[in-house]
Image (cartoon, rainbow, N blue to C red; front, side, top):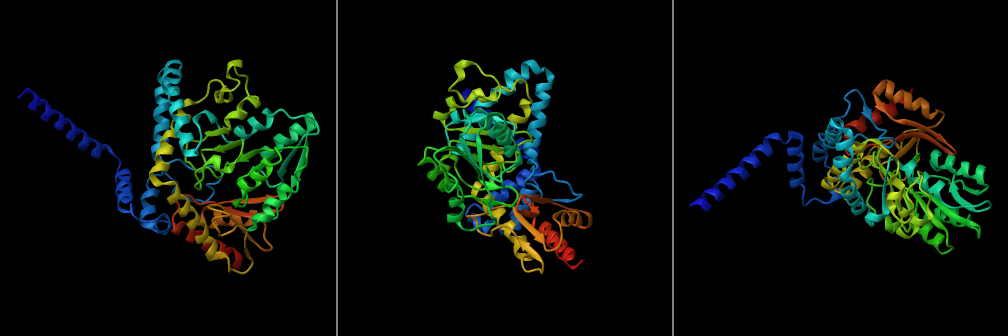
Length: 429
């Protein structure tokens, strides 16, 4: 009889917990869970066009109703569950920072490292927490032993922070920067690979490859360039600021030695999160940005000696991984590609409008660039926001000129219809 009472009591507690969980789970979360169950058998490509499903994803975000944000390529908002976790971890830390921050919240770093490594397809001992792609990549740029006369191959379309870092090394130490000037967009892999391989010489020590050119959304054939570089014993540094969690891939597939990314772009983690990947056997060859103990010479953690920092931001990243996994990498990739092509298809035949990003998934995904003959990018950017409350960004960098449009999973086709209308009216004057 005693065992029977105990069993019934446990069932009662379990039922109460289930009821309570249903009561306290936000409506948006319950609705999204139901929507995910309903599309379990739908292919990612078919689901990409299902606005009803993506409406439930949209409810997972707190987004401004004052304007339409189409500049998610700069910094993307985090889902509600991520923002809530960050606030919760801050409150915990703030109660007694020296105890809760270091002895409680920061203890989540190793599980987070493993979760990121699983997402990246690499060993957890190859992932170092960083604040953004710039910090990750500059750790490598300034940490490699290079001497006067050593050559580094990079492009004029790379990100300014990386270019500035390399120029500093050139000025201080006399290394030689070998510049490529890409003509974009391109759907010719042979052309893209050849621009890099033609720049290789016996003095080339490293090639920097931007996985996706952020200004224009151009994907580069990283693995083919890397394979060619490795045959000449050239190391490979990949700027993955815009690719990690935007489309599906694993870092080891790229055949690179170093990879840096931001997580506050496409993963939807809190602002100020990123990571550095270093191939395990290469760790010992890179000096950390901040001093680390000698015993960590071959330990990936030597790149994390920043000192006191907001651990609550870092720890909320786990919730971003959970949300990403819940949606699914392939589903997200197909939706982003669909949204980009949706608006580009509707404006490509408007007189004077020029589309400057490929429609093909091999050469692009979420980011698109558009220009209007006879008009400056800043003019179209300003017009869209002033008249249609559509937030974009004007780009003028090297031989790239246009307005960058960057939707995200919470963007609806209705949002993009307003963008299309704005471009149409702008052209008509």
